[in-house]
Image (tube, rainbow, N blue to C red; front, side, top):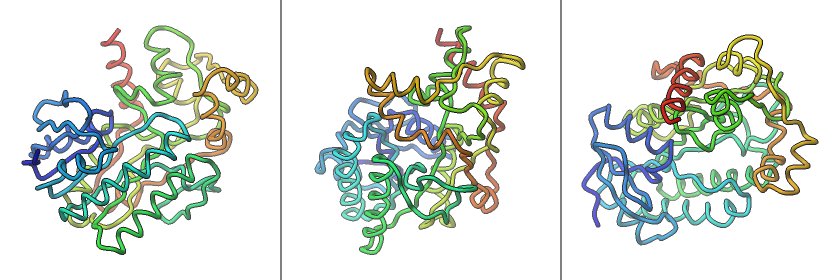
Length: 308
């Protein structure tokens, strides 16, 4: 199994993978989508492979120029600790073997609790199990870079958007609004919280993989100014809508029965203090702006309602 295209998206069936594929196609590329099932994105070359299998990852990257690691794993600290190092090691080894430039999608968990805005210069200081996994991944990438890996890191805040089924904002707020139910925000609806729109992530990753000026850096992906939970929900549902807040006590009770609540509790600090993500460096360098929040929310709601 060889890859006849220059751009290969590892994890192409996830929402970020699909957005990256679409952005590459819009830029005139015919990318390959790598996943455990065939791609549903028109205009891609579909490659079936398991990212936990080193030989299959190597075959998927043979002949490629740029690989985009956009894969996700179930939201579990245990799963992340067990599987993420394997996925990353396999990807790094294959990229080095075939001389492929890696574009790595990261999140902000490794930053931990930050006073003020998060920037590309914020030190890694994780305060959660999932943050430790992500910090270890960045250290692994840095070691591989010193050993010859060509890599660019694109970092996103919490995200939302069409088909972003793992997004907390989608699940607890927008999906409910779309069917006329009361929206919910986690922990504190009056703290500002940055949200990155998934099509913007795809566009930015495609830029990082195709623009030589971006190569080798760490970039925060375009993100609109932070709003509070109540403000996001008012944009989605209209002024005066009542926002339900799932506070710490409710989450602790839910953690007794639901793994999702248990996994969310260790990240509660992201919602009980300002969560501010600064993406001005990329926006200034490349003239790429974030989709306005009202437009992103409208498109996400329209997509959800069309599925109902």
